[in-house]
Image 1 (cartoon, rainbow, N blue to C red):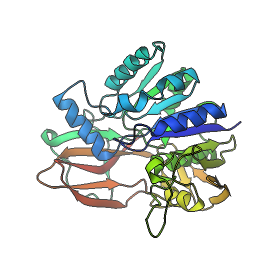
Image 2: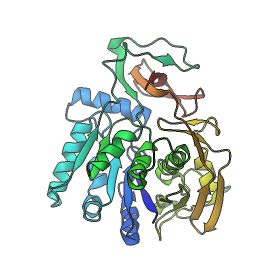
Image 3: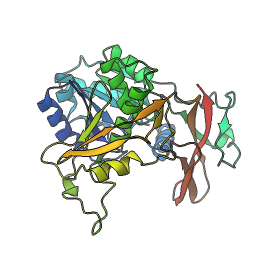
Length: 355
């Protein structure tokens, strides 16, 4: 029986009703399933740390209540695990909000796990930091530092599920690791089964940005038209024991899942298709095959994996002056993108640290 991965959000401030149709479809299928909320980016993490400076009880996803309220009870009642990096700078605060919400919904018995260890501000100057090749600036001074977070992998999340957590709350982890963890727990794959890890990681990569894979990223009106974007459906990934994937979306929702939408998301932010670096596995997409099976059903096979990199990506955010230049590192080893942003901080894919 396949395991179902549903996407509830793809960024901070995403639609708060998107998960409703996804959860309804997961319940209808009556298969093992997890719902993932991916709400954290480089600049949103910096913003969360700044918010926590002003109010120690904040620092997590501002829309957490609104995202979970429509679906939390249904997920708990139907054993659909919830994972989310909506803890941002304050996972403990997010856990408290979820516990209170569950109690209001009559499920005070909810089991919530918190994954921590990504915040390395206190250890920043004692770690063996290695800058990315494109980084030219010096490390910011302590008084300018906002945050420093390492991108954790899926192991701690899978351990939380093994401890029977209903909801797993994290700060900065690699986005697709949120999806890989329930697969590792459900299928009991080995942590050195590189091909299956790579398939699970790419299932997460396809779903992590929410509606991007169901038409949101592909859409270019007049050139690449996508129907029903106002009600675009968020993805559901069907994963088999052998790692094969089928990408689909809930019935009666807008958008589309086609070979083209899947290919664009498959290569999104991938610098080197033969060596896509993640904390848990190095992914090789050069033999991947994408095939339309039916309307809004696309299979992905042929993904291969290699051992994980020896070092973990770290992002350092610091105070800037005037208009900041935001630069971030894609999951590939050295490519940078940047654009001017009217924010008071800079977010940089600054360095890597040893495991």
